[in-house]
Image 1 (cartoon, helix red, strand yellow):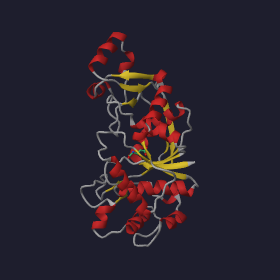
Image 2 (cartoon, rainbow, N blue to C red):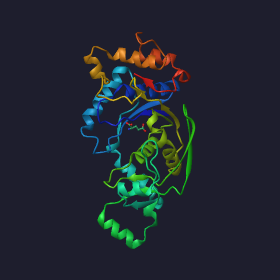
Image 3 (cartoon, rainbow, N blue to C red):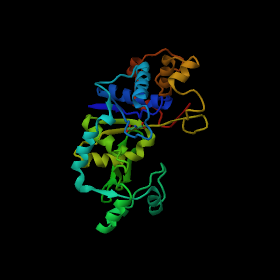
Image 4 (spheres, rainbow, N blue to C red):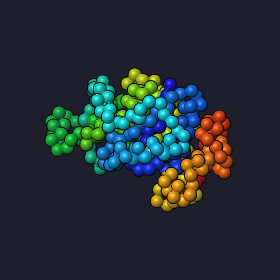
Length: 295
Ligand code: GLU
């Protein structure tokens, strides 16, 4: 049994990321689970200096007292695992040559998170159309969901159900897609508890469905309400100090940040001196506010 924290090593973790990591750690440790770290560094467009950024993220988590079992997993070192899983799915996958624009034009309105469900355009191509399009553009790989619906149970959101579209498992630049890699890894790492930011709730039904297709057991989910600024906007890095380094430069120590995060979870006062094990002793998921935390 294991939980996990899976940051993308693109920049320093901000208070929202740290709070989610803390909640994931508290959920895992309070239920006797292991807790694993996985760096999601597949996206070469976004991840530039993954090794160094990941090391800094690790140091920040450690400064708060968040510890992990086993070595960190780097997705960029797991390419063989993704290929093997894709091989298992080969009979259900098809090539897609659609551009972003074509998808936008054929799709219904985007979902709230901007995601556009795919209408299966490339599934219906004739052989000659396929050859023609393949010559013009490297294909993405999609999995056929056959109009599935998938429901998950989330700790805060409760029952959450959604249509599963034929989503991308490998992008047309050859990079394994987030929704695919995360499922392959959660299965491989024995993760049965997924605690992460609320922005990923909409991906959970898709991922749960793929977990079942790959023969895994669907984990339990808790999508942590995000941190906003005082005006209710998602916390942005530019506007004020939000990383441990920025806060340290203003004279706020890691211990004070831990107390601040603990207070946002109703586990201590912001000015209390606490350690992470005190927070663990007091942890009760019931008391965590189900609405965003305005910082
Ligand atoms: N890598 C994702 C992020 O940094 C999290 C993925 C997950 O927890 O499933 O937002």
